[in-house]
Image (tube, rainbow, N blue to C red; front, side, top):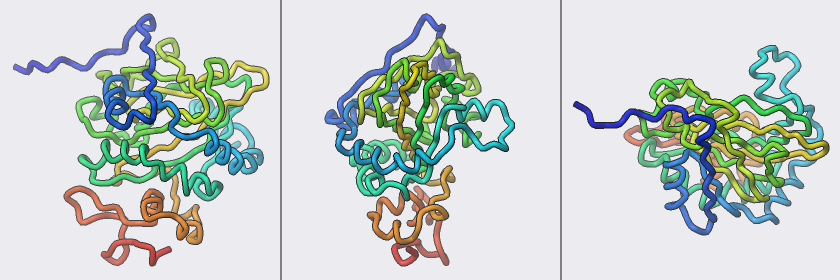
Amino acid sequence: MSTTSPPPSPPSPSRKLSLRKIPATSGPAPILSALAKDGAVIIKNLFPPSLIEALNSDVSGPLSSLSPGCSPDQSDPWLVAFHGNQTKRLNNVVSHSPTFRHQILENELVHSLCSSIFLEDAGGYWMNSAQVIAIGPHSAPQPLHRDQWQFPIFTVTGPETTMQASINFVVALTKFTEENGATRVIPGSHLWADFKENGTQEQTVAAEMEVGDACFITGKVVHGGGANVTENETRRGITLVFQCSYLTPEEAYPFLVSKDVAKGMTERGQRMIGFRSQFLKDSPGVWKGDYGKVDESYC
């Protein structure tokens, strides 16, 4: 007879948990420990304010040219609510921002955490997406979800597998507050017995952060953008999502990023966006050309 305890069920709204806050200077170990326990942790000062200022400068122009909401031909009410009528989403940040591709994407703590999570299981990882998300005033809360929903097999396996499909660094480009739409998280939901259960807004806590902080979450944890109830304040953040290299990314970077831009990136940066082959654990590799590895000669 098994002595293993069953996975926990969703807690009642009265049993809210808070998010731990750990300085980036503490290194990976305490951050990973908090992530394992809660499914989410706030990393304080992951990026310095000067770097965030430069990133904001890079993306402000492209972001201003966007209209809020999803595409006009989208008719699915859930997806319309997911994208947000007052929310702008800027993709292909790699192309838009030299600051992102040369500095943000090269953060050593980010890669140390990715390596700890993905290398033993998959042998490699790359970037799923990087998206600037600006939640405008009078925005409703985003429907709660788990990032790994892109890969349904992980919903089926539930908490029984220790493998991670993806992890997400939600970085504050402006201050995140309860009132302006701070990301909301249900701590511990990465351990629930049924990953089709997404809980309720009453069970969430706000990831309130200063500029440069990041809410680091596993793809298994329930979360969503918060309601922006302010009159004139836009909450801007960027999500950096990484995944094991045997899964297909959301953004098709080789079709979005020019070869000239890719040439100027580090080998690691190129690998993150699909300009290098992916070598998996116990595998001859994937994402290759003519049975050989894709390298700088393809750029």
